[in-house]
Length: 289
Image (cartoon, rainbow, N blue to C red):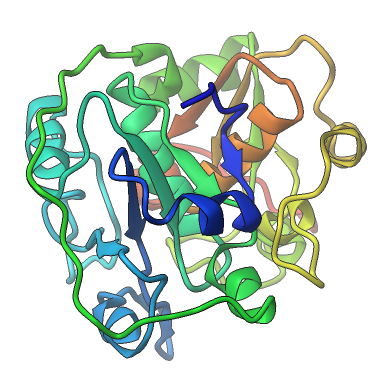
């Protein structure tokens, strides 16, 4: 196979390669269910069972691919070895072209894309996801599909991951742009923050998660337009960027969009606001304060 540009692949390309044994497709859907004071994230398996891209297996981000605390309703990275083991059991491994999608806004596919990048595997995300696939009249299936187990050999890229200590260092001394991928109202503190206290980490700029997508197609905006969106949001050329949100899901999509825009140095703060808000000693900024 010829080299793919990545990190996106088009629906047309995938339709042409569904029968290729070296291409392994995964549906990464997770549902988002609002509750009166929080969010729940049940598995998207029922949606997969109802219909998915033919030949796609289901990658359940609510099980071993993340340390999912149902009580806290958030996701955390497993250890690299545990993540590589879980991915390999699904058939994500060395020597395959891995294509990821989900049935919502591509954030969940972007989450697994970022996790695999941490392990050194450059997967591809289906641009527009299942939404675009169905809108184009392409086939779907309700038949369960799996892939043979594979071996994923980690080649860790720690520069793609930011810790709470890293973010504290940025707040105190600079060195990177903190990008918050929640809505404008949540960033300003005028809307509830499901991760805890309202507001944003001091010094953060805001590019909402949906600002990087074309609302008509669910696909990511073209690179030129993405550069304009990030510049308007306060990201300057040549800056290292650390993305965060409530729980590092939208932040993963922001990291993918930044990669498309040509920003090379991007890390995701996996703890995001769920971790930051839980520490009462760490500051948050509310626009009206």
